[in-house]
Length: 525
Image (cartoon, rainbow, N blue to C red):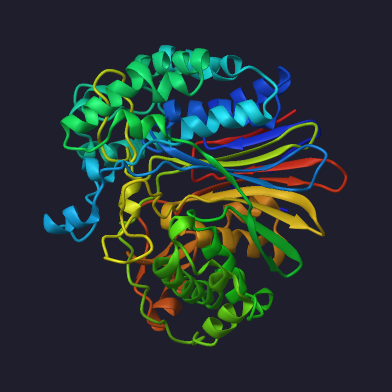
């Protein structure tokens, strides 16, 4: 139990339904939808769309999403892939001829067709209780009337301001500057788009005037996108993947997401007695850093669009983890994994909802880097993601950029089962950090017995392209010990990621947690 004389927050307990998101308005909307007769799918859609207005630097209808869903009355888990594909005209060879070594982050080459809207429409049709128009109504109202900019959102917005280009500066800046905390952000163009989706379904976005606006804007910036690319967009169902760690089953979304990386990292850590270590000491942080380097190296070599990936079984194999664990020196840091084409980013929103019938949704959506490509459509102000920057340009690599292909994705929703029963939908935001974040959260829960809020609040570290980032929650002696092991230790400018989770107790009580590193909260009834 936490010390109530110190700053912190308690986990939220409820019996009927509970949601946890990265913004209070989204959590309130999700709760309102549940209490109006909607289920977890309805609530997740309503909150997820609204987050594109509350946190436009993180997500929006110009981005992608992934979903894990447990139906009511069952324990099976369904995976829905709402990631879009590269336009048919995208060519890695042409980018190489132009002298690019990676996909340009803020050019039309990085803009894949948005997949989230199609996934939301499919999720509503297949699993929702309410009409899509009723579910989207709160987001439409907030887009029209505006939302006050929250503190963490304002900080991220200010950092991203120089990346906005052309029409995006008109729609996402206030007289050329990022908004201050409390200023009202409105998106009437997106309200109109959402009204069309509410009335026409996916056709309101992928066909007609909205699609024409997006295609015309991208082609004027030099893109190869066509109306056919947008009309052909379709989410896909798949089978989740999973691995076991000390008595729990960790369920992840299959590729092209990087969930297999989290499973591999946990499989590596299972070869060490993590529970015997100081949970916030240098030795545990070192082991996690080394396991992450090895797991991420495998990710960078093999992870891709599933139709182009052949080494998934290798990544999930216990034998692979055993061999990699043998490479770890418990006293010295190894070199970092060769970087992927992506640069460091932390722009993602994750939410989870459990309803009274115990349908559970674990949903994550993103525009990739802050404000994605920095481009927006001219008429409606739809901000375009830059997920294509997740491709590489190495000829013959399974993740090589190609028209019609999905890039390797960093965003991953998660779930935990024990003895076949779902006990927790969860997710950890933070770009490349996410597999390491999943592994740490699972370890916090399993190895150290922390409750969901304690497990999320706990300090984080991550060894990635920027060196070994160690949050200020760690004491200086830990940083010194890590540096003595050879780590390039740094205190990050921003907190590492964010997280939400809902524990489904055997007694039926729901326990929700939301990361204080973000503006959000958990709410239940």
